[in-house]
Image 1 (cartoon, one colour):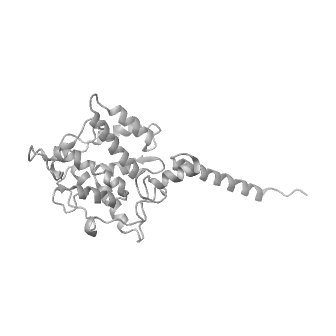
Image 2: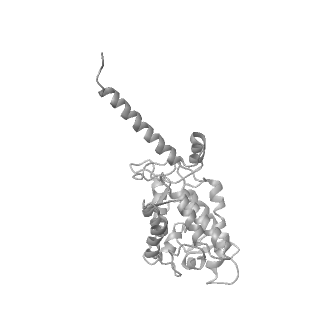
Image 3: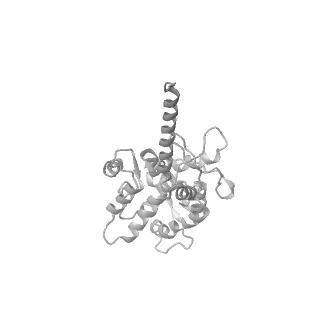
Length: 266
């Protein structure tokens, strides 16, 4: 509900907001060499603007803006360095970093409990756990997870006496759903690309060239979707309203075709 976007298109498209958002100092994000990085390091490398291995609070804010999130939501994202700076800095010092910087090389130290287990302890990607996640929670075998299925997954993964882990999981998957959902689901390929970080570069680059032939990112769920859904149907599920309207149009077309082919009676 906190993103800036247009009405989502079908899955074949990939775009988001019509308004261009640059990183600080108007610099274009450029994907670094990821060969030596773990998947978890690649997941956050998008926010390392100058590729010096350090993610600063301003990097976090401008990175979320580049992905199309609104100013209030991007300001709220500053909770990330607040909570994750100290764990990643423990490899260097026991004293907290007063600048709340996140160190990319030791991001695995910020892993928390009550998660999916898709990342291992070193930040590697467990593909078998990713497959198991969809096998268990994709109840209708659609290839995507709905908001309800994600909610059930978060609840099932909760460990006892791990309130912090519960909150982090909710914030992470809530943000993922706001960024990725299309037709009410987070689709498998998009989520996998989110885990290894490649999706973030694709979204930002798509937004940079929104005036060219390839459209920008248009998946996700924002305030505009919420308002439109509540106004038109009293529900936040705008994809259901669109599906209903599409079926109504199909029925009307079928009735018109039937009327045109019906024999005239004198």
